[in-house]
Image (tube, rainbow, N blue to C red; front, side, top):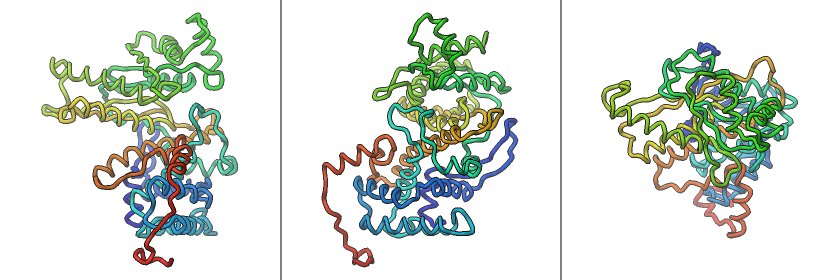
Length: 425
């Protein structure tokens, strides 16, 4: 793998990790190369390295910030490499060739590579504003080769169990979702053998829907509340009362973030971060709970419970919000909170059908979007003078509108010194 591609994948946190079973025992170690190969093979096999997808990616990215040579040269280069990697008769995807040639030319910078990979991966998200995961279109490759996709998804870490690593946590958050997922998360919490610390259930405004939520639960909540418009927070409260009697769990009812139709993970994380930091500071001041070490910054562990394929993405969202809140309150030198995402794997009695794998594919894009946000922060810190592209031109839900807006503003022709670049005019 050439240096620039390796650096881009490192910033996107395509790293080595361990696959564990429900008991926490390591069953397989995934290397950086294996992780990277699975990601790129997945993109190729799902059709996201097609000539049409690559052309669109170059057009969109160049509209926001041009490459250092013409779009035609960039597009031809990318299409040639990807077609060669996908045409090897001995393997579905020639990772060795791809890793040595994708974006290796001087006219590609590390941020260009990050933007290209994330843009192409975002196609898998396949959800516009207001569209839920159960409304996704099934990718033809997943329908025809579900076993191959499932194998790749396991290597990408979004199907196997994520058991707790620590034996004790300062706090635990049970993440809100559809009724089926909330039940799964509460059941998982009830089976945990670790010290969960103070426990919160994070929820907020969302009207329950027959497409997402179980009819049994919806009827029971409506009967208990004696109202027609039942919401997620009502449902979570009902399930906590049903499944966690006599357990001290606090329910967080977060507001709807501006520009959204329901409460988001980030909004819930902001609420719990403020509560958690206030609690920590009061305890440090009163010496109610002695930190793990005697000198700051004091380390704390927070566990959030979801299930695959959502745990990893939510962990990144919550961790980023916690870091931002710690920084905003001027506590970076005093407190460090490490967020860990846990939850059961996908394989179980229900099996893993094509619809569920389609949701996995969409969630891989959502996870990549969170990796992208973290990568931008790190890259910008290391390269203060580099202007990065506006994420709106890359994210699935915003890029079409952003491209149209940029095209409406500027229709300037490309102009490059091909002799200086060492290219044929």
